[in-house]
Image (cartoon, rainbow, N blue to C red; front, side, top):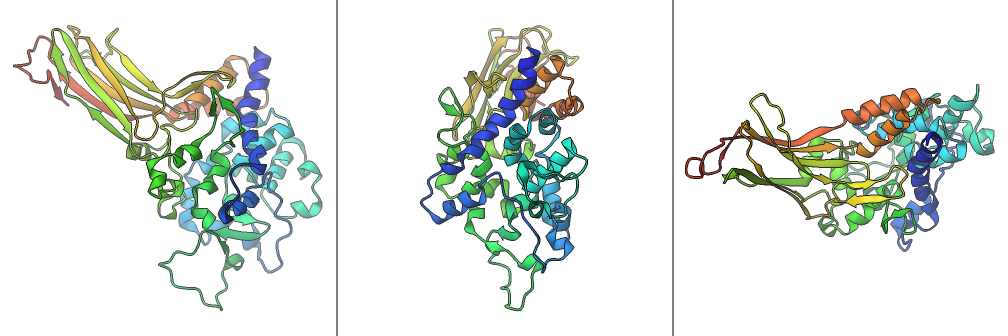
Length: 431
């Protein structure tokens, strides 16, 4: 069991999944338009090295470090620094990579730290006293000055905006004054392309190809396709509309309570007490996420209702719950259930239970566990005596995964055992 957990799980969960993205470059999506043609080139991974910086660039302009970009783009840097993209090489990923081979972890880097220069700094950290590029790269391919820990910074500015020392980005904002021919912008400006405002730009790391890894007939990662079938796509809302509003670099999603609340509608029916039973209905509808809620297999949402006594203790045999999740085995071979909500779909918890004599409160709560799958994974790795190079990082990742849990919704209703409908129409009072 130890060998299975230690060797197979990290490879399947990180390397195999991302290998599906990497291997899709030849036939990811139809290439019958100019945007897709650009994206097929732009996200052809593993990415090539930037090469020698042009002589026209100063040291700041030539740097790949996000801190260099901060000098002229402080608001974007401030957003990115707080984002999940900045943590794409967090302890969970990095802790597993330390026990992988080069071929295995390159598949991870394709989406977690895609730059060739990041692969080089990772190789230096793991194996060598000096920089020794992977794959026999020539000296010119590693001539760009970078910090020793560029790989730890995850998805950095250069990941999405730089290829071969040419900068790329969306078209200039229409509300900005036009540039003059004499304007000399840092790093000689940028190449604008409408692909940066297209959902397919995000699909590079958030969609498996049609022939990618699937379980129970469903792709393991299918966010872009889910969006394509959504009402939001039909009205022209893109991934960027919700996750990068006003071009903010926050990419808020399942880890952000405000973002999650904006995507769902929660309703509660009146609480009733009839013939010694207490009942209500808690519902949640996927109204505005623009994809399945949640997308992918990592998060879990738990809808619960239960009775408490005056000490605030949950009373035995009163808890009822509904789980919203695509629940898979840790080796990704079996799907146990998939109760996620498609756009417009509603999850309902119909609560009905004998009203206990000690009951004072009926509690309705919705909890979100953004990293539920990874929590199970890290616990298993540690329980099976995973004591190689990444142990300390896996312990840190476990703590971070459980700390990400939050309460999306909670209401407490005072209930009155023995009250009749005439005395208390709803049998409850909201507090």
